[in-house]
Length: 108
Image (cartoon, rainbow, N blue to C red; front, side, top):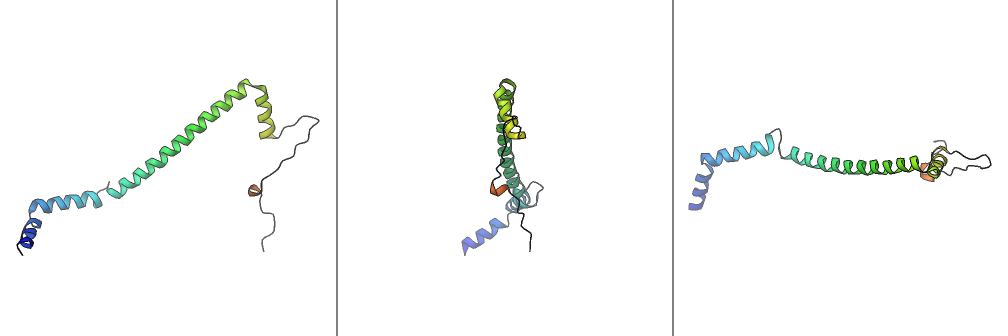
């Protein structure tokens, strides 16, 4: 019994009540509560990953651009692949993978 009475006195202490109220307000009721902070951390990780991806894409594009500016064979290869250009005595066959083909069968 003495420990229960001591615990009740401890809980009724004005500093403990004020501290508990402060913690509850800061963790759950504040504009920047714990759930908002967790969501912001998740968004930051996603944006950082996105930033890294786009930086890699920029570097790849810069390499491709410098290659196209300096290499005539690269220009010809790019024109043949992207724009399906051909020489006079050549035929171009385009092979479309199955996952990119549209379903042309009628729906029933």
